Amino acid sequence: MTKYSNFDDMGRAFNERRVDTETRQTYEGSFIEASEMAKLSIVGEAEKLEMPDPDQAAAAVEQMLSTMFDVFRDTRMEEFAADLAWGFVNSFHMVAKRIEGREDDAAKKLGDLVRSYDPSEIYAVELEETQLLCQTLEGCAEAMRCMRDHAGEVYRIETGRPFSTVRGSRVSSKLTASMIDGADYLAARAAKKREEHNPTGPVVAFSGGMEWHDHEQLFERLDQIKRRIPSMVLMTTAMNKGADAIAAAWASSRDVKLVRMMLERRHGNKAGFLRNDRIASLRPVEAVVCEGSGVQIDFARKMRTAGVPLHVFRRNEQAPMQPARSRRA
Image 1 (cartoon, rainbow, N blue to C red):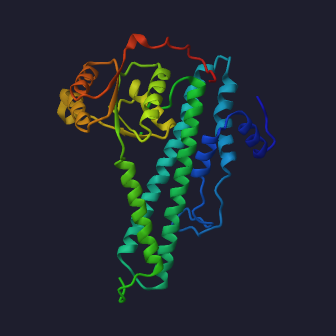
Image 2 (image 1 turned 60 degrees about the vertical axis):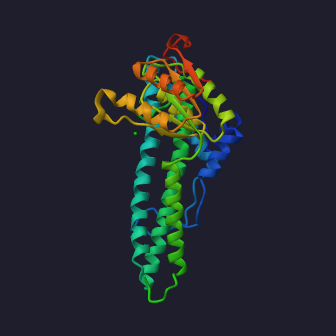
Image 3 (image 1 turned 90 degrees about the horizontal axis):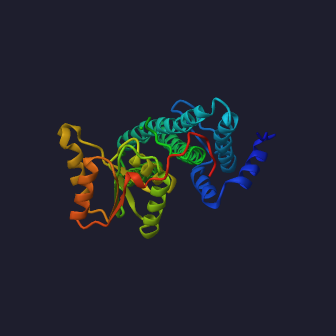
């Protein structure tokens, strides 16, 4: 196992081995300094803190995951490496969620401040600091999500299995400059949230059985679809294992918007079939179905009835399941 004297050496080694233009651009786009000042808590003072170096962050993620597999490879502990690595990736996911929660709280406070304008200097300082807190946490969450997705890809390469998170005003009528900035920031943040929760683009529907292991054939077919429909939104039937989990991992690795159409369990045994109706009503442009249960049979029938081009994968057409060993792509 290679040892590095410092992060720079590790970063150079990483760049030589793995990082490609797309990965580097993803890190550079996520580790952005919105301001030279940063504020990480309501009570803390603003500080001049930089974001981590993108190349060093990428190297650290690679080294962290790969070292775990290298240490356990060809030993009696090898089968447990994947579980530990999954925990590392999931830690990035959970920390990102916690940061997002703090950002939401700060944005709520910012909204309250914007709506209750006060011309005092104390108000102006609080407004400015709260906005800086929002921006800082937003940037940290984006960087953490970037590392989570990269770690998930290393996990996939090492194990041959995709990572899945489940095992998730004033007397004057004019506004001050800081007031406008705060309002604009909230508007931009709300627009971004709306896009995240209501993505636009052609819908590609996906449904698959819980017992599915061959991710390569699904990745290949979804890649083909994305080449034809670059702005696609992938909509799955939201199973937490099997084919749907593979499709979700593909969407994460390809930066494709994913919509998980959950069951409305109050409908009992009809819930899966009613969910198929909801997906069909959204007029998907293409659909993929992997053999599973009667729900998948109904999904395929409804897609065909609606005239949606359908890609069908049968369970016995999967590649043989690989032994439970770590392997590099």
